[in-house]
Image: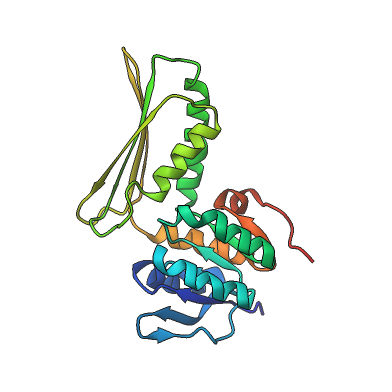
Length: 231
């Protein structure tokens, strides 16, 4: 019988609870939880799944390094510290999957957007924009996913300005639209999340994938197979 992967949930809000709910169906079990009033840092675990906050991540990260505990990071809003954390992970030989969005659909959408940007770069009459909408309690704006989409467009060769805007209202799980507008027509690509289950399922996929690996990865690596585990 296959032994379940033991997870340490760091941040026990909506996403943490959803990861716990879906874990058994992905060959995982929750060994411990970290949140206000919960302190299971000493429990044995195979992988941490961090959906805490940007402020908490740096302190949490020291524990991952000390324990050499692989981690899946779904927290957003910490881009300014990315180089520092990546350097610490590489120095410690730590396995990390970091993504602003773990949805398989969103990551495939990112690839589609990159190809569209590559094609439209040659046609100067088209200007580009990204608009994202999320629930009223989401803190960072623009979203981490919107920034990923922008970066994918730039990496694909799109060199003109990309206007970015955000909406925060109600309980919207997440809508991202990338548009290209010219004198005679408009092209729009949109991804709409119906609920958060896709994000949680992707995080669990990443947790199973990073176990036994060392290095800094994204969901693109997870979906593409990436490297083999280091000995």
